[in-house]
Image 1: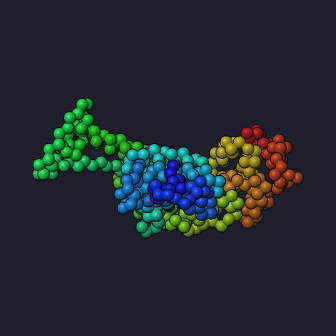
Image 2: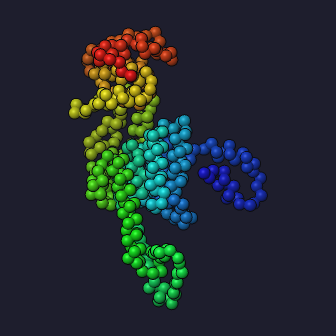
Image 3: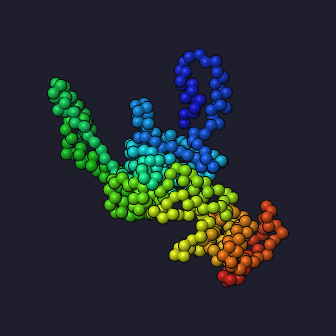
Amino acid sequence: MTTQRDQVLRLFGAKPLLIDAAQLDAAYGARRPYALHNGIAIIDIAGVLANEPSLFEALFLGATGYGQILDEVEHAAADRDVRGVLLRINSPGGDSDQAFETAAALEDLGRRKPIWAVADNRMFSAAYLLAATAERIYVTQFTGGAGSIGVYAEHVDWSEYNRKLGVQVTYIAEGEGKTDGNPNEPLSDSARTALEAEVARLYALFVGAVARRRGMTDDAVRSLGAALKRGPDAVATNLADRTGTLRNALADFAAATRPSGIGSKPSTSATQGGTTVMTDETAQPSPAEQVDVEAIRTQARQEGYGEAREIVELCALAGMPAKAAGLLARGASPAEARQFLMEARAAEDAPEIRSHVLPETGTNAKVPLENNPVVKAVERLAGKGVN
């Protein structure tokens, strides 16, 4: 990874410097390669995407290298001050070289820290491939766009132009097909077949990646073609989750990842399918929402700590099992969860949740689960323990 200090020194070339180069690390090394807003790292993905952008691409097309994107996201994933990564994308797409590898790496990094994306304003083709790795995708209401799911290749035939100039190019090669697709001869049938096969292979990878990440079938993705979907149309076709600006995405992301966000006011700035959506995790679920209590219990078991189990059971006892996922995501303690649930039930004018308050409640002391009255009550009700 090229550091900012290296870039500074390269600008001066071989000229004598009155600078202590070692001190430049302190001046430049500590700076983040991204903006940080309320715990959210903003990674810019702009211009044409390329594996190794040329100087022309960088200067005149504003190209972004796949390696640069990964460097910055990896840096954010290791940054203790970062709770989430927001990909701010304004790109028409780019090269297929390293595009799928970059998308796979982003998917892995998303398991370490949540990644969201916002079209500001375009996320097309290879840029959408990267955006599809995000947990949530925003597009602006009127000008934001997503899609262009497709692959193409081109062959330029200079043979007629060379003939008019009196230029004849001769290839001497070994290995069948070695010169297939060269620009100085018309495209042969075998070269066309090979090129078509490669385009089809990459397209299948693209379709499969989008279908898997967006919860769609391959046929549903293929039916979209390479259409450019704008604003609400992108949401309607499941290429995006919300309409909203960069500010909307930042506000919602910060609220969703805030450690002490219990009881915070839900954001209603974004829209989903033209309907106002409460994006805060503590928003009351709709009556039609199906809550899988057993799945939440499984999540608690996977977390491997007793407090998560206690929170899940508290929510079940309170008749609010859907609250468990949000409380666990916020890292709430059992005491905080109990208080939150009591207030929620009181707001509904329902009976108060009653349980024994242990002396250690509200402290950092570890509460033995085998003596926890809430757990024991659940075990009696269920007829067996919850591991």
